[in-house]
Amino acid sequence: MALVLSFSGALVACVDNGKPADQPQGYNLQDNYPPAPESAPAASGPAAPRQMAQAQKLQVGVQPAPSAAPPQGFAMQAAPAPESAPANAPAPAPGSAPSPLPGIPLDPALMAQVGSASLAVLTPGGVAGDPIEGGIKTAATRFAPNMQPEGQMAKDSLRENEHKTMLVTLTGGKCYTIIGFSPAGQVRNLDLRLLSPPFYNVQAGQDDTVDGTPIVGKSSAATCPITPFPLQYKLDIHAQKGGGQFGVQVFSRMK
Image (tube, rainbow, N blue to C red):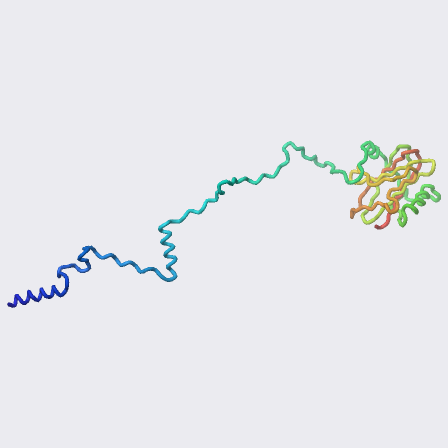
């Protein structure tokens, strides 16, 4: 009797639990495999976008950077190189003369005559009653008003068609008139030409007379250099007609 009661109690205990006593815990009777692991809760908060970006990066990979090649239909051209001088172009000779200064170029034949001319004699003082000095002073009252003599007077003699030269220093800030004179019956047409430095091959001034009283820079047409420092010009004295004694004097005033 006691044995029957014990067996009945065990049977009732098995029925009350709702499953066989020998079934392992954690297994589903229907599927008969371990339950799937619980998924992690969805990320939230500030770290969610970064986690999503990392996940996308793992899935699609890093896209390659676009190439620097130009779009189709365009051709890349190198910038043109600067033009260089021709290989056979002659180089300027060292010490060659620059281009002539503005003015009237002299005839080569005349330049040869001027180059071979001797310097006129400069006289430190005049002699009372000298016709050359008297003639220059008379011309200065008319053609060099308010001017004073500058430097010494040149006096010499010329044969017909002969040249002589003298050096004249002209300074910026001043205006100049140059007067020549030959007594009557001697040089009937005395010419003056003012030549510019440095090569004295360009004419900077000339008289327009056909007599024995040549003048460069008359009155309001006085020669006024624009250079701020002194320059040495050459004065060509030419006996175009006749021969004899002559004199030349430079006059100046402030500009």
